[in-house]
Image 1 (cartoon, rainbow, N blue to C red):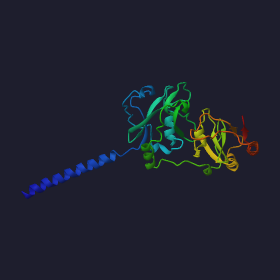
Image 2: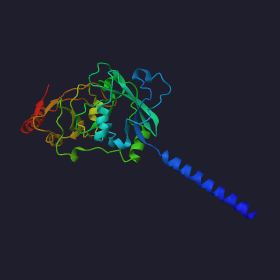
Image 3: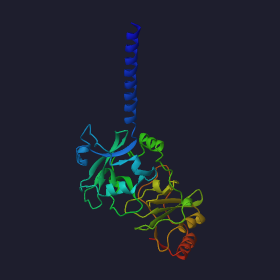
Image 4: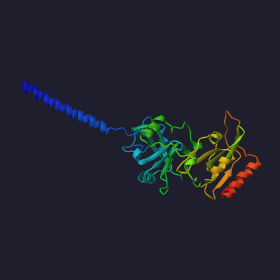
Length: 298
């Protein structure tokens, strides 16, 4: 009888060992994926996404954590591996957009659409503009609206805590660069824009990459600097000496438009975008000319 019980015990032990191995193996296989961007399973167009209560994601992500060097939370730019960048560059995107979902552990957090720069259709959601394929560095950005952020409707979902925590845990979240980290600012296709205002008896300046979109006072007076590897620049300076130091990092021949006004207003402030007195203008203009910069005033 004892031999029989030993036989039963041995078989139960072996069975429990097999079950334990399967459970552990299953957990390893179901390891959390973290941040990823997926296309939709059925290639649902952006025009139909809002009307659906549930959208299934594709089998594999179009961008995973292993495809990224970093994510910049200031600019919402992703620096991709060359292979991932090429994959996005070759993605077939119609002029009406191609839907994607930003996920954490395969759970959708928010959705958007890949878009092409030659599209004549506007879009009020989150976008990733399809790169041309020959751009360096290999960076894409999660942006708001198309053709500009003024078309966007709703709250900005890109600062979602779950998404940022996942990226931080994966070591993919970068703190971004500061003006002190670089010797030269990048050249800008549309030049740079300079804004100035007086606050607490001092003249403040913001140098920002030139774009066609409207700028708002809230954005200009923010002290947060943005210096991205992809070329987007916004630098705040206090005093003539500080803005000279910023201008000295621009490449020779760069154009700067010194604006005297802005769209929008700060509700709790009476700050106004304006030019400083003529002696300060002359000093900054002379300094810029000496650097070979083209400074224009309206």
